[in-house]
Amino acid sequence: MLSAQNLRIGYVDRVLASNISFTLNDGEVIAILGPNGSGKTTLFRTLLGLTPALQGAALLNGRAISEFTPSAIARMVAYVPQVSASFANFSVIEVVLMARAAHLAWYASPGAKDRAVAANALAELNIGDFAEREFIELSGGERQLTMIARALASEAKILLMDEPTASLDFGNQFLILDEIAKLKARGVSVIFTTHHPDHALRIADRTLTITRDGQVQIDATQTLLSADSLTALYGISIDLTNSDHGPIIFVAR
Image (cartoon, rainbow, N blue to C red; front, side, top):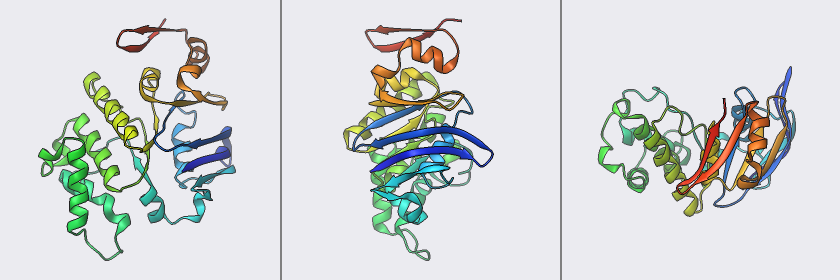
């Protein structure tokens, strides 16, 4: 269980947001929305113990995140970054196997069990057929699915996903959202950042918003993401309507 207890996030010379409190429940999806620079990534880094909280604490199973070693955190919380080219010269299965490092002694190499876990993670996402392909050769959607498989191979029950649909085409965006919904159904808890309110409306149980001046709100997604609240969050006029295929957001320019 991951929770934030009266968190104030930011840096010594700049507070980004304060009064952040929530508990991520089993099998729950929380979306984080806010303008660029509002502190979404800093909140992730604080929850992961990479950036110290200015006030309050990030808790993992009731203990301060600072009390855990990095490998202990990695066994419980998996981070899915925005896809980059940092895995050039590695195959898909090798990228996924890297997640098993938290379960190994520092001198050990992945064994048969680790390879089986990695293969199963690929199979769960229906991408096992390109396990031996080079990561750099994959499409954007395939790379993002590989990064999710890597997170699954860590056997963590909590996933933090930084803009998982960034730079993806329309079809691949919804492929990723559907996979997050499947993870939720399996009891995996997910927090993801996004610039698309409609993505939050599609799959998030709750949504946390951070304004440019550091005001934080968290509530049920359907309650929080009204046309008025989105207009205030982004500083532009927004109309919200529904269709037979789910919520769609229209921006009035």
